[in-house]
Length: 310
Image 1 (cartoon, one colour):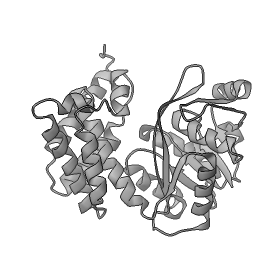
Image 2 (image 1 turned 90 degrees about the vertical axis):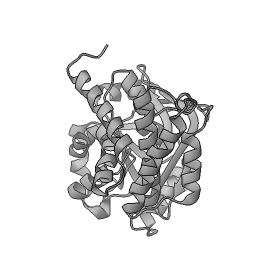
Image 3 (image 1 turned 180 degrees about the vertical axis):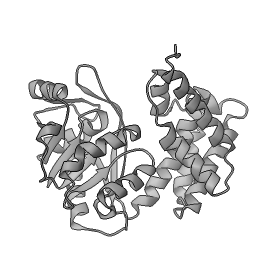
Image 4 (image 1 turned 30 degrees about the vertical axis):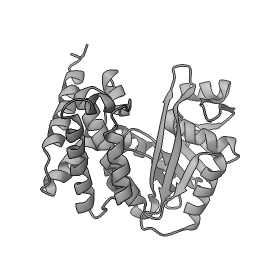
């Protein structure tokens, strides 16, 4: 199986690098500057789960031709349109696409552009960044990827992809209901991102206030209700586990969106919080906390666009 990874940043570089090091046929679609870096130094990962330095194959947009079996898409949701344009030359009806983006809305856009049957379901759990020197820094000890056919079928392609990721040493799982798992993730992620950004604090700092735990639970319950009314009721054990995470008094957990916001960067406001807000309003679910969190993020975007941020 031939893999094309769009970009060689934190997430794509990490999972693609692990695949390449295990012997998979992996090529990275990158810009010229990153290509020169990779050709000179190799792909380098620093991780408590094992450092890695490996030569990798690269291609630039002008050189891209069909012949791949799977594209791994790890862009930010706000870069989706440009990313779809970049991979369009190889999406010939034979090439599948595995998006590892946050949220759900990207599936609709990918279906329209490339066809429902060519788009797999997937999610990943990892904290990794690309440093200025080109090294990928793994920030925790989690490197989990979950994949599946969206119609719950077991196909040769999903088995081959699962086998490749398993061989690479990452924590790989082939899901029998990937859409449910994606809805469970966005219910959690919207809560974590919306609340930690709104309060500019980690989970423990919020929960240790007089009303913090109740606010966290109210936000999370709204997201669970949204998923349920959309036809994917989260499993009881998942709800309990995720509720425990967002109400842990000693937790230092924050969303990566808060790190982006505090660094003055672009945020996925529309795709993680805004998407769930729109669903809440469509389904007549209490949207009060979602509204406040989304308005806070959009106000930040206004200030950032006007270059008034400190």
